[in-house]
Length: 341
Image (cartoon, rainbow, N blue to C red):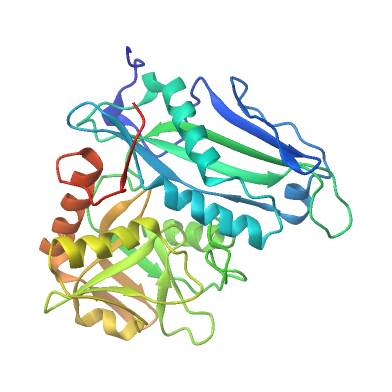
């Protein structure tokens, strides 16, 4: 199928409408059959549960063209699982995993001309979301729900590709962090918007959130998780009940220990310890892994020497191995690659 006339290499991480999106509605205790539609607009009641009480969640995943021309998704079953957990926590009806995966397949096949070609540096980003679309005025679950999934071709999340990032420790607390308790999917990003805006206004790439209780332990940024490398080559990631359980981070930690044979640790990471690390990176579906060059704190600037000019050697190995798995140039662990076309 002929590709759309898009300059794939120049894409940013921005929304481009595609031809089709998937929609299913929950009424009277059951989901309808669902369908692909062409209208990108959502029409709901002014009193919809999503608008009044933020009864909504979303996921994010990517679809790739592999080196041998296949169209595949990366571990979408885990996105389906995470959305199920979130829906249960928010008293929303579960959209079953098998239906989630079937919707993904149908959506991508209907939009094949928008899937970026192999080697272009671009990918097809998938955004599934679930929200209370029925009207409610008392504090209660909505009477009706909508599941939608759309896709858009995107370039790198951070402009400039994989050049080192400058971070700023945020002085703003989030009332509800992204991964609060058992809320597993994309929630409460709005709580990070102000801090992220302030960081960018001050010339930084992103903000860094510390734990709300003591403001001493590293948690995450507004849109990504952390991975650090110690001077002896151990890969470390922060452990906290209030950060998003990232699928990319989980995959990178597996790559580090099971494929690259590195020692790994998931544990609390004090901010003051970062100065002893040799490498650091932000990881997530959108960013994959981007190196950190420096972090500005209230007490001064912390530099990560291996990431000041380019990716450090271990961060590079993690990046190359994971993207190689996604693009089909590195053998994938069983179940990681979901074939679509």
